[in-house]
Image (cartoon, rainbow, N blue to C red):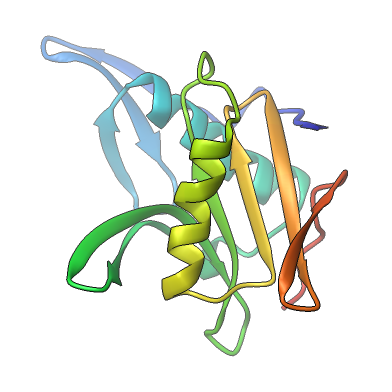
Length: 146
């Protein structure tokens, strides 16, 4: 299991008459603050401020096709050549990092073949690297490979 350390200065939250909002620095817009969105925005901050992933190569809630179904992938990291490199599936903090969550990320991998899959509930991650046509669990969060 990989533990994340968040930067304390990357999250912007505002209180409105319609509830709390959180700022998405990648999409440059305010979103409803839900438990899963809190995790997603903290992970984005981790990718940017701690791991130094280029935010211009991060896609959030990107629509992908799984056969005839349209799904939204939480976070996709691209290489500089525009090929997908990593899929990150976010769950709220109370959610376990279960086989069901891994299966969801693996379905996304069927549409976007990537060398890395990460599932996270914000505090912890499970990481997987594709080796010899199968995913092997890793105990580190990969550095960006552009």
